[in-house]
Length: 225
Image (cartoon, rainbow, N blue to C red; front, side):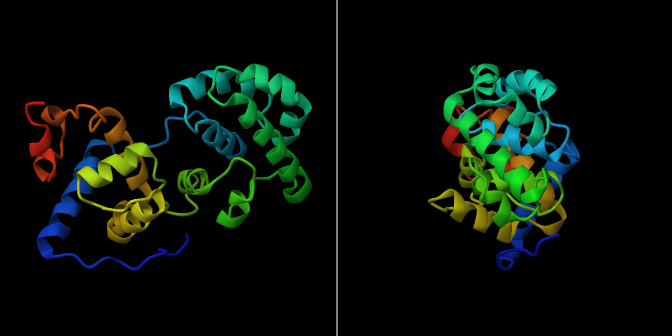
């Protein structure tokens, strides 16, 4: 497992207790959170995550349910071809550009890596369509690196819970990685996403059913909204 990229953040005993309580409650509610994207091998995982950019997991799963029956390896994806790939994923936003990236990535995986998905961050991020967030999701999901990928949900939840005041996803990621207890680090990414997706939603967070509402510094802002 990769080393923590930033040192543990020093916190007051009260704040450390609050953060421990946040993650222990999520752990009690969902001990083994997983991505909601459907996949069955490392290649289908990295492909699904790349396709999910600016798209919903539900929409991606609908398209990949058919796609991965046709092609679930880089070799099979190249045989399928870009035109057929575009037709298969046409319901996903930005599908043309994503199809080009998937085909380009498949070429690299076949030519450089023998058809296998590389398991180090630098190599993953060298693939077309795979940025830091996608690489973090893949590495965390496969149990290779305890990474916290920051999407809009994680960004929003981290700020509302005062876990970060970072202005960019990279800054938020660094701050979260530095303060999340080691026990929860491999699962924090999923808890934060799921909390933002279903409870701490953008327009009107569901504070009345939130299991960490009493630990949230922003709760007063939304009561009665």
